Length: 256
Image (cartoon, rainbow, N blue to C red; front, side, top):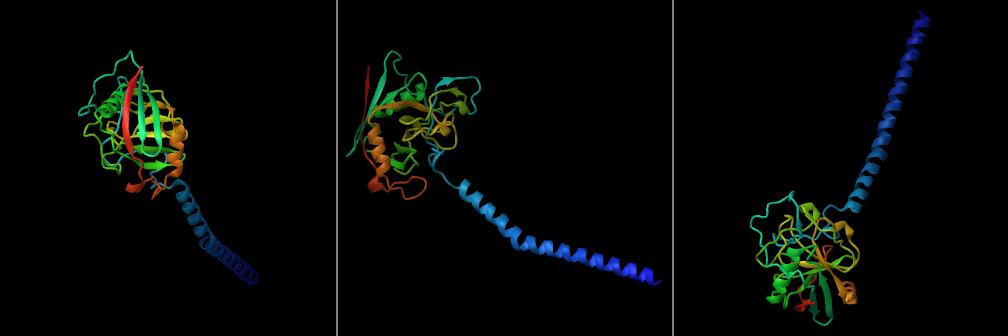
């Protein structure tokens, strides 16, 4: 009987020790585990920053910008409601001289073979004087400078949308967003480009296949450098105060 009581007491003590160990583990987890896990989540959130709209995003604030090139049979969005400008002369090479007040002229060689609709749209707007007096409202150093919005804040366009000439939209455009590329900005819909465009400051190839490059800077890249380096954005989206936005005096089109 004494042996049985002794054995029972030992089992009870062992069970009590297990309970204490379990409680201690819970206390440790509550003390260190949850704060550590929360800290990890905070670090991930800061690095990822899901609300950031800077690099990798060339959206406009309304349905305005997009492009198009060599059509394939699997476009992801309907082209209904889009505008097709008059085609450019395929036998000519088109250049755009973008004159910017207090800075100088940036010359861009357009690639109508890779992006015929984007190129023709840009030429048509420039020749109509649409860009005269407009500004570069969004500038991010080491990324790009964006302009061509009559509202000066990323919400405007020409009133006409063109198709998005890029891979994700079913168009074969192999031009890359390397330094000096000129490309069409757009809102979320692929076929929403209109008048807004951007010039790449430093290689941003993550945009390839999502936005339509339609040419490259051949002269004046140092002006792009100066504008981007001098910019003083008011937020992480590159927004520039209206009085500080570089002004496009005019965009002249010439051919060879």
